[in-house]
Image (tube, rainbow, N blue to C red; front, side, top):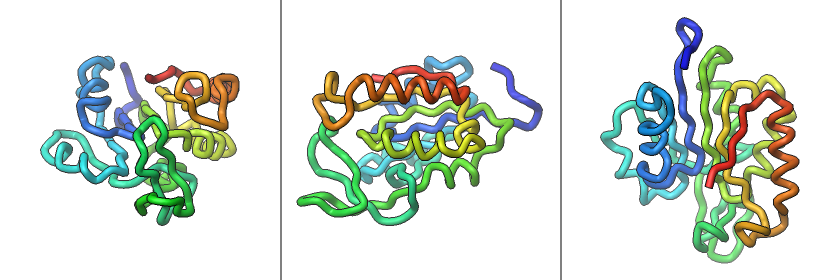
Length: 181
């Protein structure tokens, strides 16, 4: 992989969970993966101790959203979990981060940016928000996306066709797209 002089290689893991689930996998298997600066976004604070001494890895404690501020995350299993601006039942409160704003503050257009996104249905809010701002979405060069839909994950309201439409829009925006499971 080549980058422009002065450009960085950045891996952004949205919904990182434990480092072994995708950060370490990326560093080991992606071409020159160990040379990337890593930003691991994780809302679940129980994973924070696992990131303490990892070189070139910055843990960003919070959930990815289209706004900065408080939000609520469901306490059900990861397959059925979801984020909301409003508390529902036993949801717990956490910090939400506007991904578009974060990208503008931390990434330059010349940087090589690879993103893994596993954000439990919030991709249907965040990605259209980014796509509405071409300069922002183009800060991402490559995207691995776990798209949550009825047919595979059993979660409503989105279908696999909704995911295919999202993939198509991302590809049309110039994003090198892959499915992540």
